[in-house]
Length: 338
Image 1: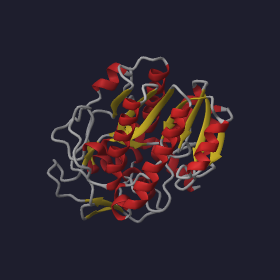
Image 2: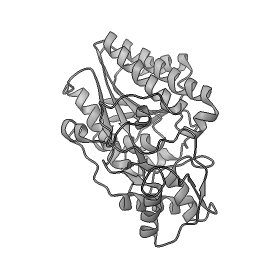
Image 3: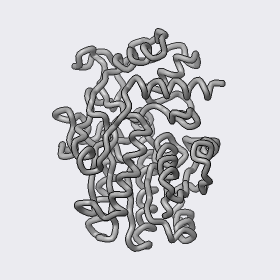
Image 4: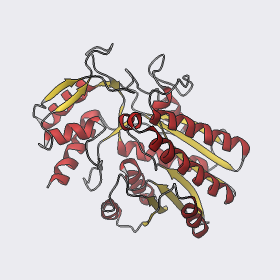
């Protein structure tokens, strides 16, 4: 069974490709390499001992997308990761985010509809909830005005898919709203590869730990939380990747309760920025130099998941602790620094 993974050389995409290959799916990757590296293919092959097809395509190029689907009309499912994904950058360059994240989604969906019955997994985000009224956040929580263009593209993306499913009963889709993915494959053959200055906390921590950066910036210590820093739900990337395969199989096996569903993916536990720093210092046995910087526009105060729906309906739960996930991130950072 052939599955297309867009953005399949990115952080979460590459780990999901590995999980698909290990379940004997045939996988085709599309990636434009704007925030990834073709060397990731080698890591995937080393882990799985399997070949994977890769096509370098910019999904904003509608004709290229149409040509691809014309050649791969036997695709049974799509897992769509391809998107720009940094909150801070989206505030500075909103049009880039609207173009990248929405036009690519529309073009892929249009081609999928031509295939007849189709299965689509969307890489969504907890940013769709904005500043939630209460935590943990359930799937029924109100969708608040987005605090960043990135979050808005995920909200609009979900609306596009929901409307498409309503109009086209043969389109089956699940949006996976995940919280904060961290870590790397236990083999240390694939992991997070931020280009330039990392936008996420954990690569910033690991780069500081191995000496690539002089210190870590903590954005704000005056939030209304126990230690003044933001609280997030940090989920291990391999646990997250496995959830994508389970969601896809739910659609393939026609187990979904409707042709559009939404699931939160997290650990159900909130950790502050300082909690993560302390956890990292514990597993690495080293002190991290950090400074308090001003708050970053677009950051919510507190977000962690209620995972009951995914636990019960997808038969999925996160299995890896924060300490264990951070250790894989450090091992990966040490490997790529060599």
